[in-house]
Image 1 (spheres, chains in turn purple, yellow):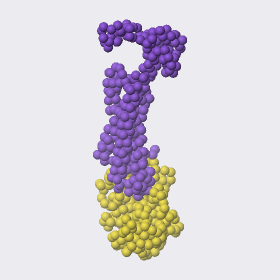
Image 2: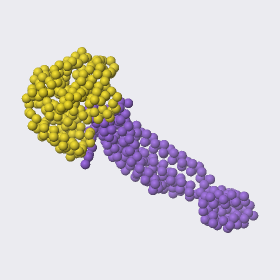
Image 3: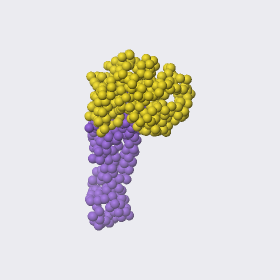
Image 4: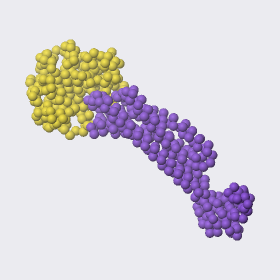
Length: 279
Length: 259
């Protein structure tokens, strides 16, 4: 069995410093990615939840029969129709209308319609809008969804910032380690070690440190992410309540520390080879 | 042994930082299996000459050929490959302080990708030969200067180099240890046919062993004495071919055949 024995011995302070820095940065990266993914998934679910709903307002009651006829003719495209009764509407509107007025005289006939698909809603919506007001629910949620996607962009930007910080950090530490071990590098050169062999030694060392650091960062970040999501769910309604992590999101989250380790190892190799070549 | 040129310098000049000339227009050839002393005043350029041979320093001009191969345009990987056939011993030992004696001696083998089993056999044998078998698990700082120098020599000979360069290896040693070290080098030269270039200030060594001398003076080199191997052997009073080195040489070869 061949086993590579490390020539470099990273001093304790360097090792602790590198572990702490990568732990903190990977913790923040996992947290940022977790928030980005949960908001993204939440926005998509929320969007999906409302994209098949619409309210039909029949202002001219003579058209009610025509609208009902459209519903009956398209039962294959409509999942459900709920007619909102005058008394229910009156109860809902009462607080906004003065007590002396006869509200029912001013209220339109309203239906809450759930379509089988977004495409069905588009087709039927075009027919209905000729005779009544057709209001897709998603139109009312546009601002919230847009804000959600902006939040996703910001958190992804934060995560990329963290990854860039890890890159700079690993690159500087690798350079320092190589410079601190100049004596060992010279001896390795003297005994015929290739640059690849030396870089490999550095890579093994950085891989071990960054794997431990990423594990620490990940283990700390996951419960905090869970806490954030459960706090968001306590809102019960709205976009916050829909924040969640799908199976793919969890795989992506687990993959991030692995990516960070590979990234750190690659950067170490690159930095060491450049340093050895005197660039 | 075939008498062919193994080291060739043609009009080689060397300087540091492009300013301070150390060697100017140096030309010489060294044959395979020769043993040379390299001498000269401090700062004359002995170490620079050795560094040029070992490819640790690039010449400002001229051509260096090692093993018949021109070295000026070699890549870093090619130079590493060349160093697989050479070894260097410094006065300062150049040992890695956080590694044990065993691991220091094993270093050239690890670099060459030998398996742990082979490394163990080779290192144990070589350490026994240099008289450090019991010190394998100790750290360099726990050893005397003479012992550290022997570790450095063990690391150099373990790969059976074709060229051995030693820069003042006896500088920190007493007479007894210096003689012991010389015996090691001479045995290598006689038994393995290793070409040895040994830089020294020690006049006693020069007078005792009477090998041909390369003198570095005023940026130039001069040669004195013939590289007559028969004569060298006749002068050699140490252990003879049937000794431990013959056994070691055979074993190193056997173990090293299959990495």
